[in-house]
Image (cartoon, rainbow, N blue to C red; front, side, top):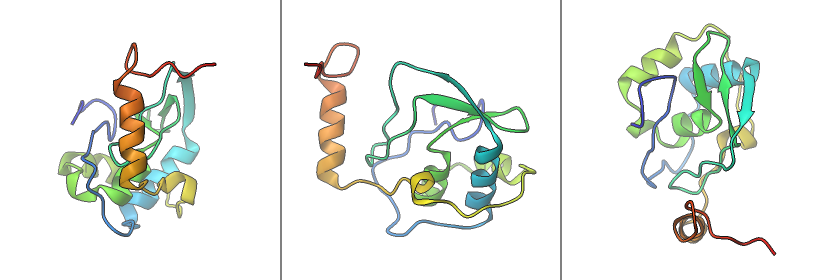
Length: 133
């Protein structure tokens, strides 16, 4: 886990479930994220080790907590790696429930894509390859 500040600031492994887990936790996070406010953008995006890509900003949820765009993805595809303390935070959200869209789920990419994305990240200045032309 990166930090216990906010909700679901974790870095799971590349291991994912074969099908997304869509339950009350996932649905609560979907509803809260949709009602949240997009924060200022950063200079890059976060890429999960499985290849799922976030947006370039954090989101402030209606309860004042912050999270990132991959929060739904983590709950759906990396549930085994989500700490119980984070599930408690998600369960306390009082924003209703909603079914996730494919964009919110961010289906994991194949191993080749994940490897390629990681290679792009690792080899350049400040982490990113300079691919501008």
